[in-house]
Amino acid sequence: MELNVQTFISCDSPYCDADTVLFGAPFDSTTSYRPGARFASSAMRGESIGIETYSPYLRSDLSSYKIFDAGDLDLPFGNAGRVLDTIEAFCGKVLDDRKMPVMIGGEHLVTFGAVRAAAVRYPDLAVLHFDAHADLRRDYMGESLSHATVMRRVWDLVGDGRIYQFGIRSGSREEFEWAMDHVKMELFNANSIDSCAEAVASRPVYITVDLDVIDPAEFPGTGTPEAGGMSFRALHDALTNLKGLDVIGFDLCELSPHYDSSGTSTALACKLLREMLIAYS
Ligand code: MN
Ligand code: MN
Image (spheres, rainbow, N blue to C red):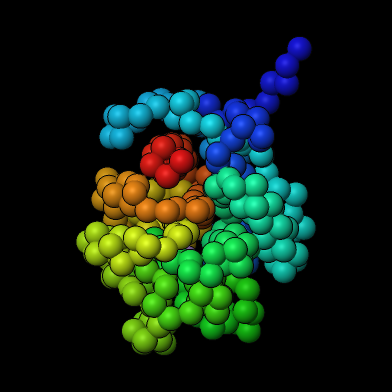
C-alpha cells in the first residue's frame, strides 16, 4: 500500500528529489479585521483538484516539476513570536537543502518568518511585495508583530531600497510618508514591474503576495477587502514576467475561504499558485 493523502495538485515528489517545498502556515492571530486565513492552505489543497496542471500562459505543466507538499506547520496559535521562529526554522532547513520554500499563509505576518530565514542566508536579498495595504506601520496598537507591520519588520532586516511594493492603495499618512524615503512603492498597479526586474536582476529575490491586492470583485475571500484593486490578469502577468529572476522563495497570504461563498477566490489562489510554481521552479 501507499500513503494516500491530499497534496496541492501534482505536488507529490518525495522531499529528497524535490526542488521546491510547498507548505502551509495556518496562522491568523494578529488579523486586525476578519480572521480565517488559517484555513487557506487546507482549502487550496482541496480545491486544487478543480484546476488543470497545464498552464496555457506558460506552456508548461506543473506535473513536470519536482515539488514536495509538506502539509501544514504545527503552529502555537496566540504566540506570534514562536510561530515566526517555527516558520523561520522550517524555511531555513529548506534553503540549506538548496530547495525553494513556498508558503501558503495564513495572514501576512507569516512572511516575516520566511524572510528572516532568507535574509540571513542571502544578505543581498530584495523583497517584492504585492498588496492593497502598505503594511509599514512601526507598530499596530503597540504590537510590533502584526500583519499591519510585516513589511516594516522586513525593512528592519533588509534596509532601504530593497523592498518594492505594488498595488498599494491603503495605509496611514505616516506609512506613505515614511515609504518615500525607505522603499519603492507603486500605488494601485504594477506598471513598473519591468524596471524593478532590471533593478533586482543581480540579487536573490523573495516575492510575497497578499492576495487582497486583487480587486474584491474578483477576490472577495479575504480578511481586509479593499476596493479598487488589480485584476487577476494584471497580477498574473506582472508575476510571471519575473520568471527570469533568481527567486529563492515566495508566499501567497490572506486567502480567507469562509468569506468566499462561491469558491472563486480559492480557485483563483490555486491558479495563481500553479502559475508561480511553474514560473519560478
Ligand atoms: Mn498585507
Ligand atoms: Mn493586505
